[in-house]
Image 1 (cartoon, rainbow, N blue to C red):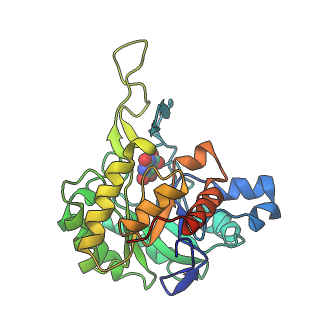
Image 2 (cartoon, helix red, strand yellow):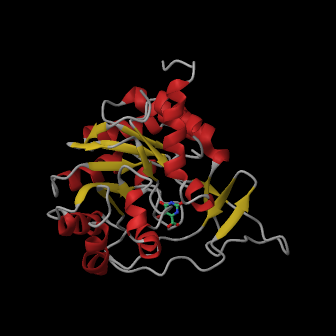
Length: 296
Ligand code: RRO
């Protein structure tokens, strides 16, 4: 049955719909909607925006370019840094009615290990997502494009925390299955994919790049076929659960992601258009159980 509870990381999630990191600000939503949000929280687990050891201002504006079927972002990983995340955000995330997955990135193995160690004892956290695939910082995609780097980084972190590790993979690899296998063999408990595809928008008033960061990461319905192909290939290669995302905007898309082998489905860009998208997509997914199309 689609849309039922899912056992993962030693927890039982109410359903398979989660958010893509950086696409839903649960703390801002809670400030605005208070306890109303708790009653209608759209995700079975909440994935935080990626954090780094040190604070970052992010990329210069403009940071977004809209496409007919998606968008390109050049956000550049702005965040308050680990210390303020622990002090200010973690207690607030603990109030959410869904388990927390913290997305982390580092500019070296030591940085990432320090973040994972500092957070590793916190009972508020269900799992870590290791962002090996940010297209908007210079070194962001290096680890996620190489099986060797992915294995080395994952095994370093495996030695530093007992919490489940999710490797977030890049869509830029020709062999995402090999990267996923490398993560699995090095001790990852799950993989998530896809992150955004490297893209570029040109300033209509001149020939240069529109986005302040130069290039950006493309997401939304236009990337869904890429995501489906990669999720399907990765799910065939690994035993660990796959969290599938990329352009999911309705229940049918979510079902296709599950049929491609995903255990959980991430909703990303659609959250910007419709902040209640998670709730709607879950309802649509469950409605598909009444339809005549059979699950494979
Ligand atoms: O902040 C970003 O620019 C960003 C990140 Br960390 C990421 O992983 N993927 C993306 O499209 N943008």
